[in-house]
Image 1 (cartoon, chains in turn cyan, red):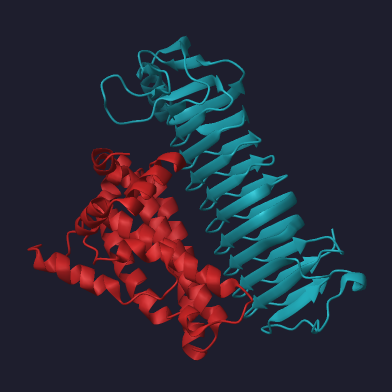
Image 2 (image 1 turned 45 degrees about the vertical axis):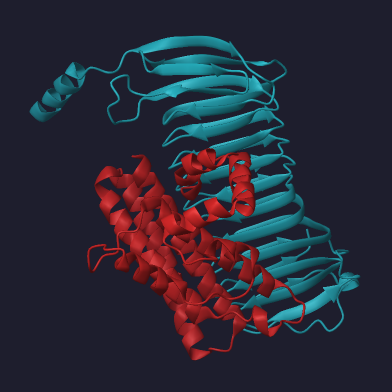
Length: 290
Length: 205
């Protein structure tokens, strides 16, 4: 009890950084490059149809900065005295839809929506979520989840232990994790390269005509749910895991062998327009109907 | 991009901090400016021609020992080769890009030519050397990194090392299996990429 009282007294006497509201705005070009730096808290970025940046939120006193004009701007939160340590802040930032963003975080979550331009997000263990229809999405987090929703043209994702989730993916995708899962729903990619060490991979959708889907994993299970009428060359290989093929007999390809552990499967369905390659060391590979 | 811009951005490029558009401009300048290409190679300590590796699928010669030798001959302290931080990151990026290209070629179902045969041992030697140096750089950065971040990095490294050991053992038992070779290279690529990202975090802290 005495320790608790002492702890409570100590906490009560520790000065928390004072917070202040921020409400700033600057004019900027519609395709400007904008660098955003907020290490802890929340960074919410919303595209809008104005040639300006507007920032609202709550930040530690004196820690917010913002500057720039024309084609470039930067804003963010840092300790006024330049010392180390992350200051938590909540920022809601409106930017031109076609802007090109570079966003840095440590533990802060990053949420991006309504953009059509390009965004590059980097975090240590914060989550990154991007929604919309952007030309380019690059996101990286050592431990946080990475979520991308919508038909982006080009997506590059690097995770670690967090889960990578994509919904409605189109275009060109490269996604890698270490232990985290890679989960795709409603996918119709032209080119996809998915790589994990121990995380599972689940792909639900189709592969565009003349498209490619490549999956490499060490021990994660791979589940592909593909249309029965898919026209593709399949090349499936698991050194020490089973391969289960469950597409309907209607689309069954010529020379399709009986699944076995440790034996690669190569076969073609339809005209073989797309290409599906899976390499696993000891994970199970399943090709199933939707 | 001017040569001065190129020089100013080399550090950020090597650490992957340039935006995609800036990186593309950087690479375009590298493609057309022989002087900057040569300067980059000199600074990274790489032998002439390494910067062209990403555009080639030919298996590399065992480059890293030569890099080490050159750096050592420049008067670095014995035992530990003092590679410039961004030069080390650049070497890692080039190696990752190169092996990704080789893997992509091998994943194609088309008949494999002799030139596309994966020389796993040569790639492993390069990856091991880069990995060792990046591990040293990470150790130096350890005190600047948050303990929780360091724990995350180490947990991910253990997962990769387990995979690497298992696939290497399997390849040793079945050396002619190209799929196993791809798995070994993939594990190395993951390890070097994670170490590169981790050292970049350390540099930013």
